[in-house]
Image 1: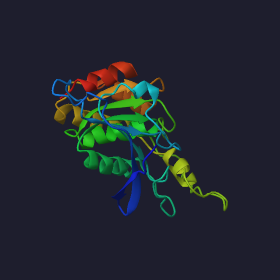
Image 2: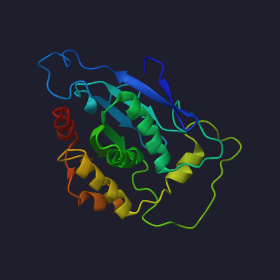
Image 3: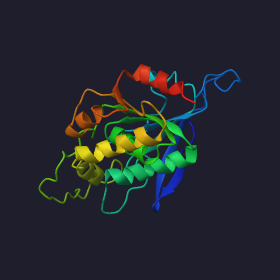
Image 4: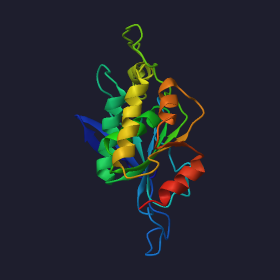
Length: 231
């Protein structure tokens, strides 16, 4: 990352939005294909941070490429005492989406789950969400487990926040909750395929998502090409 990130405020916390690359040369010419000016927003996995540069497998995206550090990760703020949920991270991603106007999302691990939630919550602004394998994809299962309160040791500080790792890895994900967001995206986005599944790990929630209209198993390259063609 050559430039300092832009710090966006979400619920008194600052989250870092990194511009990894502007549009490819010629992508904004009058005869450019649809979608050439739309940002690709990268959402990292649990315990990760935004990449330093555009990953090779995403390099052919014609528009700008941005990446977000979730709360408790990378250059974003760490809350005192934890309290992490997938919905908090969705709020982080929504702050980035409002800054960009609209975007195609690529999420790894827990970033994939957040991309799914945001696709349903902001169907007109999310022009496709690509779900990829990565840390935190499975979550804590469909039902709550035994309550425990993790607490980092005295020498554990700084990103990634140990509380984020502990709490988000146990995040409860009922299949019917996830599919509600898929149906919202399918109904209101105007897209035939609002979700592309480029994953091998199939948690209970993800198996349910794969059965829904509007979610399609595909390759990463095909998904990128598909969403780059959209208006």
